[in-house]
Amino acid sequence: MDTAGKDYLKEYDAAPEDKKYPLVQGWMRTEPLPFFKQLRDERPVLQTPECTLVAKFTDVRDMLQMPKIFTVDLYKVKMSVTGPDDGYLMAHDDDALHYREKSLMQGLLNRNDLPRVRKMITEFSREILDDADGGIELVNDYCRMVPVRLVQEYFGLDGIDREKLIRWSYWNQYDAFNNQPFDMLSDQEHKRIVEYHDEASKELVAYIAVLMLRKIIRVKVMGVFYMILNPIQKLIYRILGMSAPERSDTMVMRMIRTKFAKQVDFPLTRVGTNAGGLLIGAIETTSQAVAQVVEYFIEHPTILKQAKDKAQGSDVAAFDAMVWEALRFRPIRPDIFRQAANDYTMAKGTNHETEIKAGTIVRLLIHSAMFDTYAYEDPDSFNPDRNFYHNFALGYGPHQCLGKYVGMEMIPAMVREVVLQSDLTSESKISYINPLFPDREGPFPEDYKVSWS
Image (cartoon, rainbow, N blue to C red; front, side):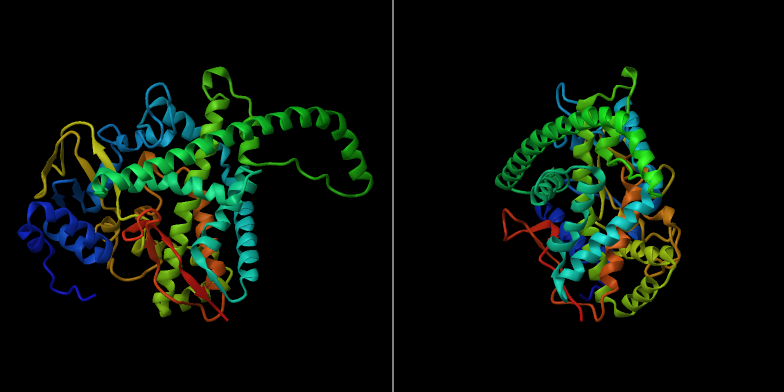
């Protein structure tokens, strides 16, 4: 698409009020980088009738560090933070529950596990690609199937059909991130998405209750057998000159085996809620990231060759850096959205100082911020040797992705196995299909076929 010389702001200013924001949405979808560049250069804060867009790196970073002012209130209904229900930690802002539970979960997601996680992901990926026989529908048959296996075998959400886990993750993500007021969906669309989310959540809650019961019984019963049989088992293996097998270890089993003091306030109900959170956060975001990086590489043959060369080498970090640079160009979302809790004057003392009124929905344009010259020199060029601390692919601030370090292994490992295939090609671009309303685009990529020799 030829965007040279296009004046987005002139077109925006000339449009009728009811057409302004639809223009913005369209540009963010189809030609984000030139649109964002003009915003950064000429109007770093764009106040539309529906929401306010913030385009510069320093402003985005600043506002993401003020959770009491720029809140996640829009998530609360989506994540059951209503009435007596505490819901999920992600919908809490800088309170005791968020601080406590994120800290506990980060400790349980021990970073010492990362080599094991990468090995598991590599094995799952190779198994699927080897069985694909030269071609695969990447999104459903690979990008979702690899992380769902990690959900079962590392997180421990087992004993359930994988398709159900994928569906539960999908509708929770869809409603939370793509059914907000600024998405401008019809009442019918909004209602149906909520209904599908509610149905998925009921099924997930019922499953988690049974899962907790199964795991508790296993811990109690196996604990007795372990105390009795472990010395005998160790003796037998020592006589045979073998190492005794390790006990089953998953995130769910860790949470149940760990004894928390009452004052820590992490009872079994909260264990179950956080187990569900692991599922919801793992599949869809990973799937979209992997699919979009693969597509970006295929669309840029020179970069694909560089990626293949690095994938074939022993420097894992060098290949991973190419993946994160590709996600700078194709992030999962163009923004992180927040809602102002009170009036706030942002960018004080600058030419774009702006008062944000309480209740305003603010779209912090992380895609734009990652192309700001404050963050990166020559931002329009593809350069894997960049400062990762300025990359917003995994969020920033108090709400940065809980599974950040797992994702930093999983996403590149999955991309690497695809890139290693010979003569990698795709039959089409990623499409965004809304499963409820096929005439509208949906938020998550579908039906993307790739092939190799």
